[in-house]
Length: 231
Image (cartoon, rainbow, N blue to C red; front, side, top):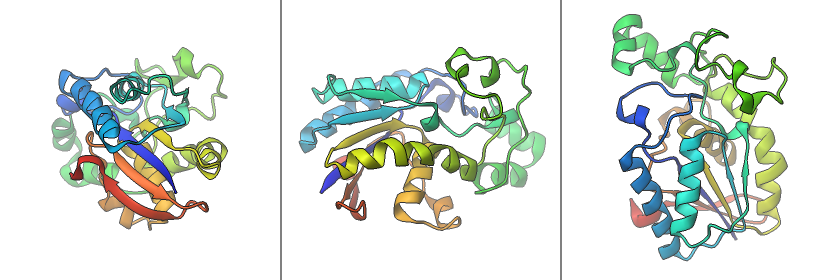
C-alpha cells in the first residue's frame, strides 16, 4: 500500500482575522508556522517517507510544505507547485470579514455561498487588487481559465486534471506522496477519492492541523484513513 498525506496549510493571518482568503496570497500566522513544523514532526514520528510532494502556488501552502518536510528530515524530496491545488477562489467575498459579510448579505446567503457544492459567490472584479488576472504567477494561463469566483464543484474540476496527470500516476507507481494544499482543494480531492456525494462532502472539514493520511491499494481504493497523532 502507498500513503497519500494531505496537509492543509497552517493557520494563516487571514484565518486568524476571520477573513475570506481564497487566492489572496496570505502568509502563515505564528501559530500556523508552528502547526506546519508540528505536522512534520508527526510525519517523522510515524515513519512516513515521501518520494514526491505537491503544493499550490500560494505561500501559505508552500511554506507549510517546506516546514513540514524540513521537520520530517525530508526537505530534499522533490516538490512541484501548481495553481490547480490553489484554494477555492472566493470571488467578491475575498478579503471580507465573514461576520461582516453575514451582516451585509444575511447569514443564510453567506452559508449557501460557503457550503453549497455548486452555488457561486459573487465574481471578483478583474481590476480588484487580489485579481489573479494581473498576477504574474498566472500569466502563462489563458485568461478564460483564470477564475473570478469558484464553488467546490468548479474547484474539483480544476484540481482533477492535476490528480489524474500527476498525483495518481505517482501513487500507482508505488510512491508515497505529500500534498500541502488548502481546505477546499483537499476537500475536492477527498470527494473524488472517496466517491462522496455532493451532499456528503458538505459535512467534511479539513483542519489546519494535523495531517490526514490515506492508505491506498494499487488501484487507489481507500484502505485506511486517519489523522496523524490520533486527533
